[in-house]
Image 1 (tube, rainbow, N blue to C red):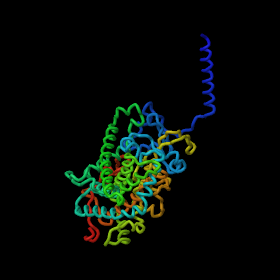
Image 2: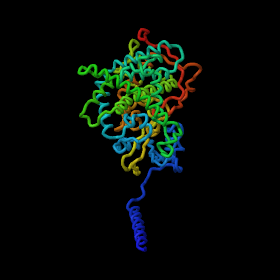
Image 3: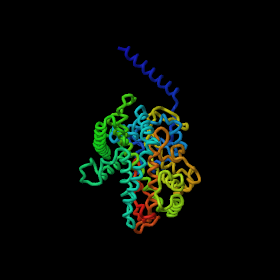
Image 4: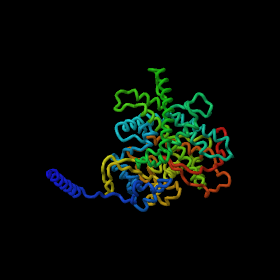
Length: 509
């Protein structure tokens, strides 16, 4: 009877000795600074309705590389260009994946779109498809006529409202959605009339679905970080995410089935005419390393449709919010347009080398109002050391692009809207200057930035070229609110009423 106790005592002694040796051989990790977490919730109590602003204020106290706890899970917040470079360039491969969050599961076809797909063989193949088949210079050039037609449609819709108060928010989303829809899948799947029997959804319904998706893709869902709360769905986000996923699945399946039917009718004579056609063609290739399943097809379609629709409209709206606070900037832009373009034609994509000041206005908007105030989260796939700190495997990383654009070390008078700073310095916006990352950087940089820039530049330039703008009602420049609505993209909370008058020869409208 005494023998088992001998083994227990001896075993306990060995276990204690092994524990001591482990501690001696593995010194305590040096973690980044951060606020002390509360039990169960961690630091979630420190986040307000605008997480990027909360992160920014916390970084002023704890530093540019700050470790938080969401529940019990480590979250690294990056708030300076130097630390952004560490994550997005020096250690890019380690931080190239995405955390497993509910938004990716329920709203992005089980992590099948470009936003939420984990780093791996499928993601590599999808990015290659985008860069070579969808966003290649040749492909974008061949579809320029669509961008021209929809831009002119926008101008024609605005012109009858001359002299009357309007909100650009009532017009820009419709324009960007029509443009991108035609590029991705042709424009017969939604209609402007609620009683149409030739479309599966109205334009207003599709726009609402996209707005909902962008909101849900950016929220802090408690169930992601405190698993015991996920079943309760206290915020109601999971239900909304599931509904969003069902709505988009129904829509995209209809589009795919219709494209497939047309493809079958034309058999060997079939020539892809839009981006869905291109994806269907690639899906039939048996030699691909990773096959394009139905979910993956819908995920790639969704990235194309959502990625360019909301971002371009939001950027143009933010630009006008800033311009109407500073009429002298609009006046300078008008002078440049008159000198470079004249008053007898519209601005084309090839004109932009002649419009450095308007380009500077757009870049300054990106700086103060980045497309994603906080870049989509990254996820460490192994332990690593960043700037002398030990970052454990499984850490979620948020790069606060909003903070980068306001860093006084890199930007003089950082809180002011000063386009001239980009005339004096040819600052890169494609991901190599880590103080300005409107499209991200590294492996997860937005593959569609070239299309986005074409749409934003020409639309913004032609709105300024075609009309004189002034504030409606009794609003004064100093009354314009710069408050935000947070989501995966950030919008002005209070749109401004504008009155426009045509500037060009009337036959152009």
